Length: 123
Length: 196
Image (cartoon, rainbow over all chains, first blue to last red):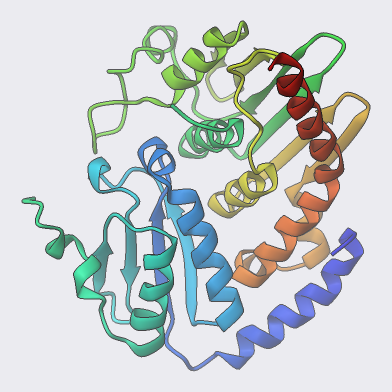
């Protein structure tokens, strides 16, 4: 995209994509982006999630939040399913983010080994 | 500490978003003639009373309840002080809260800019409701990215947060600022080779 006038085209493409995945149930992914998250490497995780979601047209909205409260386990990624169920993934990096998208969003299977429950930290 | 100025910017903008500002302006500047670089973040959010303002640079102060520390501002101040720069924060509640961070451009410890286009995207993404203006002022190279213009051109606020649209917007911002930043990084490399 070279200028703002190209936005028209981008909008039309985006509308088409969004209508294509309508009917699919939407997931919501939340990335912790406070000082602790940023310092622990949440930026590349967010970038990967946004880029991969765009590339594969996953039915997912990626959003940011502040400090989730477990700074030592950052970067933290929360996945909210269509029924409102929440899965918390901890110590995420770009590679894990791709796997989470493929398994959890793509196939609907929770990637248990990356969850907070599997991290061995007593809460 | 933060490795890049782009990370500091993102961090400080998150403060403004949490302060419920409906307008945030980020000025990113670099002046070779004055040997200074840095950024400022201005918002019209809730602001801080004088007694709170006195405490924000204390690393053990935070208004949040999820953890006991607030490190963003103290870290930024440390970077400025370390790099022969200046740091200031002023606030008039619901009018103007301004954080200014300046560093000596040629100082060895001044962090590199990092991915500013990425930071723009993250700020835009985290702040769907308000107006976000980024002014890049690199000597004579000036670029303004106004979120209202972008949203008006797209005509749909929700679509702006579609992943594919975000990526394209980021690349657009990168196209605008990269020519200058490339020049800047060549200069840094030259400076370091001259030293060794």
